Image 1 (tube, rainbow over the protein chains, first blue to last red):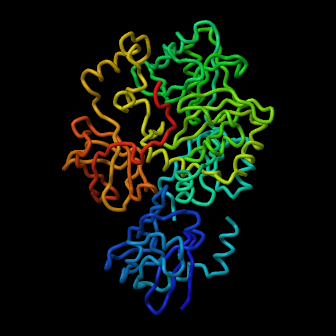
Image 2 (cartoon, rainbow over the protein chains, first blue to last red):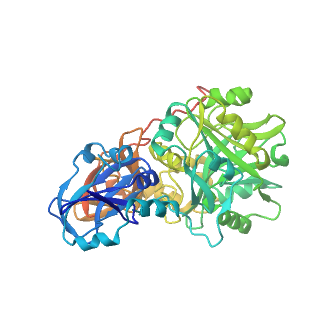
Amino acid sequence: MSRYFTDEHEWVDVEGEIATVGITDYAQEQLGDIVFVELPAEGATFEKGDDAAVVESVKAASDLYAPLTGEVVETNGALEDEPALVNSDPEEDGWFFKLRVANASELEGLMDEAAYKKFVESL
Amino acid sequence: MTGKDDIPALEEELPPSELPLDAWHRARGARMVVFAGYHMPIQYEGIMAEHAWVREHAGLFDVSHMGQLSFSGEGVDEALEQLLPSDIKGLKPFRQRYSMLLDEDGGMLDDLMVSRLGDGAFDGADIYMVVNGATKYDDIGWMIEHLPDEVTMNHMDEQALLALQGPEAGEALATLIPEAADLYFMQSGPFTWRGVPLWVSRSGYTGEDGFEISIPARDVTLLADALIALPQVKPIGLGARDSLRLEAGLPLYGHDLDPRVSAIGADLGFAIQKRRREEGGFFGHARVMKELADGPGRKRVGLRIDGRLPAREGAAIYVGDVMVGEVTSGGFAPTVGAPIAMGWVSLPHSAIGTALEIEVRGKRIAAAVAPTPFVPHRYRRQKSV
């Protein structure tokens, strides 16, 4: 399994044709206390860059973009009962949804962990 | 991730200014944002934790961005009664009152606190006023235009302002300034701490007991250090200030109040005392009287929301297919444990309990007009006069 990152502070784990998507620790830290997560419907299809989910912190609503083109095959129902999972475990249990990747070549535009780390340090 | 509706930064052409405690906030791990033209702390450890701390203990807020004004001169009360709809002549020394600036048509230019000074505070001025930071320069311009030459207005931008808020605020402040803890809600007075002159009022913007402390900017770091050294006190950012005031049902100028809003529609008629209603002689009097008689077209109300999805500023409010209002402030309320909001609705839909729907991202969520405050006020009021 390989983990990729976007410049919108999302992480993407790719295993075969399935990509699991969440937000990074840096992103949850910036958002602050998360009180609601609006997940996409299973079966929804997104182009890379489409609005795919919404994260509501105490103060603000923020969009989460589809990092890749594909179809939603599963969403993390645990976030509906416990949105704070995104704060406490953003890069594991706080995942948002899984996509069936339509175009594996889009992965080339994403960062690896080292590149993302550098990107965050540059902010 | 893109923040869509974070606390809106006021659009300023000038670069943001620094408040006297800027470095102090940063040294304590504050995340800074631009608000009202200043770099200000939005949070330290997190909005939820800070909010809960203020409801249980005491929080220190830096509100030095607010405008502190003093007024003196012949006929100052009469002059201010032209600008403010509240009873100024009847305002006793060391007493504070909530009031507002209204334009000629009765639209709200700002809301504010006004007090009568005494004992030579602020160079012997007569009246002290605290106005919103984002509107202070417009307020000053408006008042310069409308005050007679005999009245002197001084913008005391060399003064910082701290708020100490929460059920343990009295006990905390008493360890530094024992006499100040004797004040009751909406009383104020001059005090001295380590030789530094302070003006302290028992008031605030959280619904909790607490104080606002005006202090020369050069001494504010010392006082902030002394306060947060107390076990009851932690520094609190703007984020929790907003969630606390929303739960307390207190409007925020620029969001819940603006020049399109009338005093009566904003449900702030309590700030216009009987004598002023009867005698008039202030900007907006005709509209106030008309709306008291006929009702305002729309009214500011509290809103309870079903479920967990917050409705935020700008969300439309519906009854069936008809848009009847708009959310002006909204978010998750940590003490309530659910989303709440404030907004305006047309008068026929403003009764407590009226069922409404709010549109959030194309979906309708169920809401109802709710009594405010959402969390009971816990002011230290004088029992009987």
